[in-house]
Length: 146
Image (cartoon, rainbow, N blue to C red; front, side):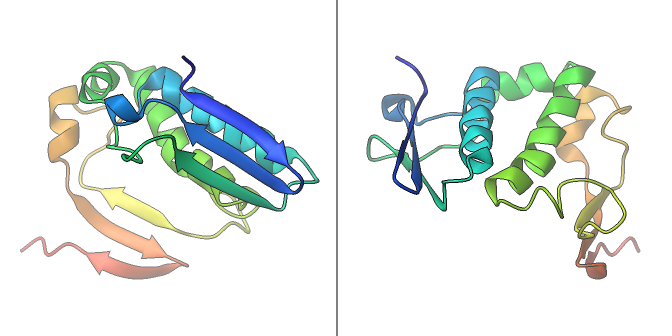
């Protein structure tokens, strides 16, 4: 069974996650399938709305912990995970033309960590702390470092 079932009905794109019995946990393949379905839908000029749903009682339990362990060990996977959380989220919101990248003219929603997630030992990623959160160019959170 595929993780994603996607179709368009008139101006509505419907994406259904099909692994409710497994909690629709997100792993590499499921994330890529979901990303591709959303991307395909939002690039269709006829689509005006997107419905993301589950075929069962559980919508999504989040990331598959086994996948997270693998991601933490591989720099390329970390880069892909960050891309999916930034640019992928912007695509899902139909805002890829104004957010999801550090680019002039784009919205300045940024999280700054106390560590460089790309260079620290993998076992320190999950214990890294957010130093700043910037939304719309304004600091909305600053960690007390004292």
